[in-house]
Amino acid sequence: MMRTSMNQLIFNILPLVVQYLYSKTEACIIEDENQKKVSVIYHIDKQKYMCMILPQFDTRNAGKLINQISDIIQISENMISIICLHISQFQNTNIPEIPSFLRTLVTKNENFKKWETELLEQPNIVFGVGAGVLSYAELMGMSAKLYVFYIDSLVLDSKCAEPIIQILTNEISCTLQQPKFIENSFSKGNLYM
Image (cartoon, rainbow, N blue to C red; front, side, top):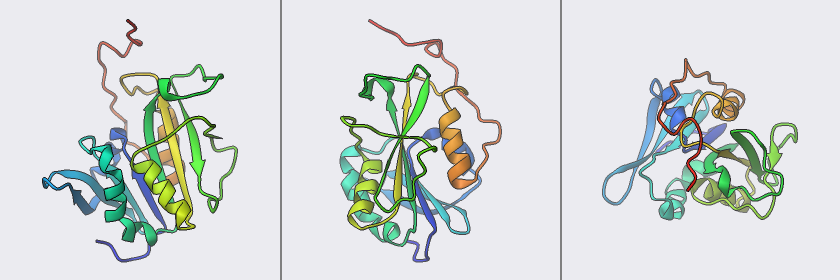
């Protein structure tokens, strides 16, 4: 495990970011009890690391994962988590009429600028590793931010990806080289029964 000080540790569960990470160094691989890789921490640049939670990760084990990487979390000066939820899980009377949007939760110690994104309102809930990291940071008096990426599509297209690309550009100063988006029969809209 890493023992140096980190300026920023970013937790992410979005496969789109994998395109950016292919050229980066794996600093740490986290496996479950069956020796299956469930998370990888990448070294992005001097003091930035990204923890990618892989799709096969069972979110019921989020607490165990947070405990496993608590040493890394404690030496981080700033943490950013990104989770992705379907828009149907967004609870509000004013649901934006766009294919994707962001809401944010922050710890008390986070220097949050209101113009960045809107805060997540009650009664919305978050769960999994992102929520665990934010809770841990709040309890430890650390600076952390959780972006909740709401999406209304089964496929991430260029329009839906705009908010997440903006986060990657602003928060970790990365650029995706010609992102490739998957087309399928459902990308034309939602299926209702």
